[in-house]
Image (cartoon, rainbow, N blue to C red):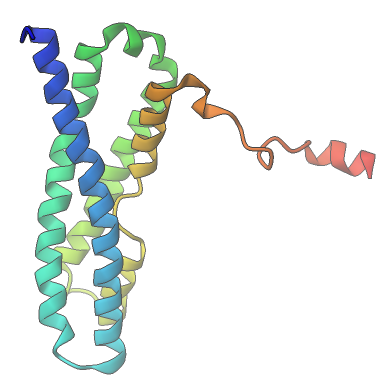
Length: 173
């Protein structure tokens, strides 16, 4: 087997996207677990749940940061490793990546800031409610891009989305 630059760059992309799929999934689960811990702490007032929650918040933060790092380089690697694919699908993928950037870098960064630095700045119920929002909402965008890479037919519309417009339904009823 010859290790040319194309093979090595695609191997690196496989490594990056593998971690980028694992880390957001982990942070979604960790966010749910931290929410439960914070809710139990808020409801019962027992101090045992707070150190456990703080421990998992540290792990969550590291996983979130690594997910962001892998997510930043992934579109660039997609463009350099599969330039014809990126050119052909730019009208579909560009809005998805833009949405992912807005969700990950603006909205989720604000929520992460409240989680990490807002414990003493906001009321306890607001700090617990922040975690209900969940982990990585842009993970669905990554799944959509991966599904399109696997099969362009993956974007077939479900039947409930393809309903008749309201005016047509009213006229036929």
